[in-house]
Length: 276
Image 1 (cartoon, one colour):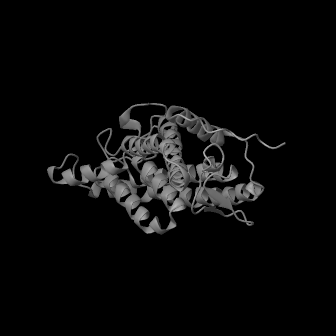
Image 2 (tube, one colour; image 1 turned 90 degrees about the horizontal axis):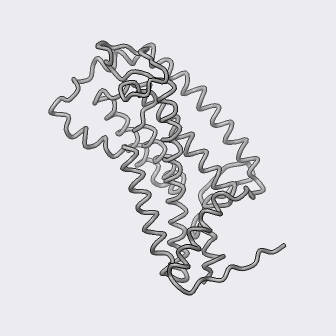
Image 3 (tube, helix red, strand yellow; image 1 turned 120 degrees about the horizontal axis):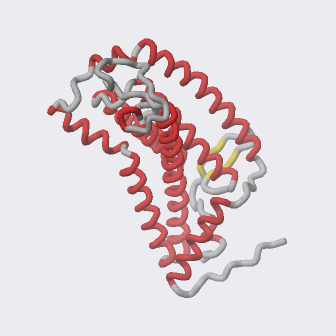
């Protein structure tokens, strides 16, 4: 049965509310892509491979590298590290999410005032921003739960270098070392941006690696913590990408299950409630 056309409200606030409602409805509707099963199987294989390979790397780092690496780092609060402290803030989840959220709000407020191609283009950007925001938000939320469950002590908590200082379900900041929250944020954002704009891949990888390095230099984490954070961030962004692709939002699915970003106008809202 064909879906009845939605009449565009004549006033700005009506168009704004309609846009917000349709954006939410598209995100939570049932998946409709005919190739979503292929994409799910392909994604599951990749996630399993990541878990096995990165899991081995994490365990190896914990036994062979973590203690040696943190012992080589300068003491905490070394005055000369002020620039590293500034740099590491670019991977702080609150700052990244507020930035993405602010951009998303700005797009939502501007789009109802535009018409035709300009509005469709802006709504396409809005879909991209939704994907970036949700990729980081989901990954960070999962990371917080893992930190609480694992309860790994940060470097030198307890007075000595100990890679196996655990107090599960501790909940304090001192025992929130694994996984690294900054690494989760940086790698989730790097994967998500690269998925939408593949040409930015190298720049975003460098960004994520630099943020991870600052956490080691500042003795905020062990090497295995930042690798675990990278794993959580990448898998989180992959999961959100599949969610969008299965609902035909911003991504297409090839016959072999490969998920690729759509070019041009991504948001079908522009052709429904707000068709020029």
